[in-house]
Length: 128
Image (cartoon, helix red, strand yellow):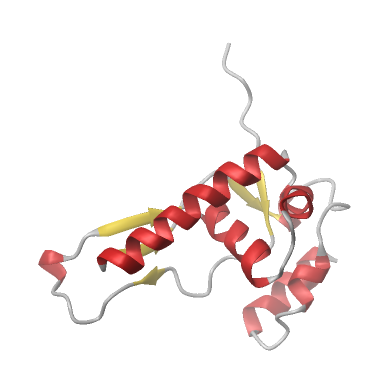
């Protein structure tokens, strides 16, 4: 019997989900796909300054899982930047924090730091 899927808690969806070189034609573009939870680990650790343990607590997973997700995300970022590939953020095994029955682990601090963005204000209200 398969193990049940463990959903990762994500506070904010990316405002923009496609990044890449603007001077490459559509027919020659190569894509790198990053999951939403990979994006969230970059946001939590690199932008918000949380360590792996704090990020794991926010996302509701083990620290070793955060480390693996973060390593994959950093490799994808590097591949996109160094080799001029388009980075597309989509999919993954996640739920927004307001979709969980137990919202105690929602780290509202990571939402409030971005008050200047309209869509983040919605996420702040949903996390409360």
